[in-house]
Image (cartoon, rainbow, N blue to C red):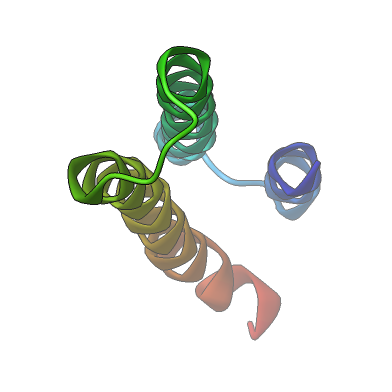
Length: 87
C-alpha cells in the first residue's frame, strides 16, 4: 500500500523517468522479498511443527532479507523525495 502511495507521490512531484523506474524497482524488490519470506515460512511450517534451531535460523534470515529490502526502499525514497519535498 505504501508502495502505491510512493509511486503516486513520485508522479505528483514530477520525478523523472529514471527516478520513477528506480522507485518501481525498489517497490518490486520489497514485494518480492516479502513473497519469498512468506513462502519459505509456509514451506517450513508444512514440513515440521517442532522447534529446531536451524528452522528458526532460516526464518530469521528470510525475515532479514525483507528488512534489508525495506531499508533500501527507505534510502531510495529519501534520495528521491527529500529534494522535491523541501524545495
